[in-house]
Image (cartoon, rainbow, N blue to C red; front, top):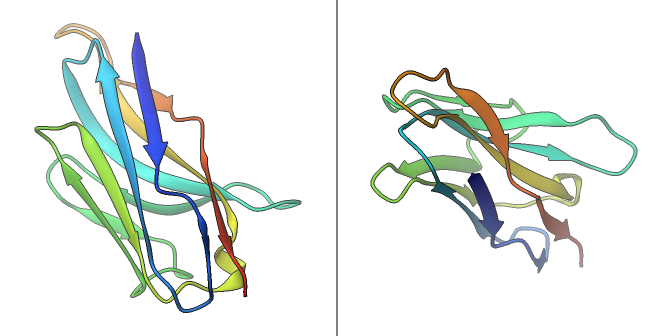
Length: 121
């Protein structure tokens, strides 16, 4: 009933850039926080960046100054612009949205399926 679909993952050389997108669809009344997590092989999932509905952002220290999160509320889409990519940024990137389906329901977290980002020469 609610779907989040990511796109934009790819193989890129160190120092390169990528832009990830995540679009929410389905039965949606309101969206609170949206953001991105990542998980590298053999590591725990970690927060990359989040943005609240009022535009407040939060970044992991490891990506601060290189990554930028943004959202288009009208299109129910969140973006992650990734610059100066490093091999250690290689991971599956997953988006989430804190979504209420009706005016009386509480917001719940919904997740996308993930998109692979590989940084390698």
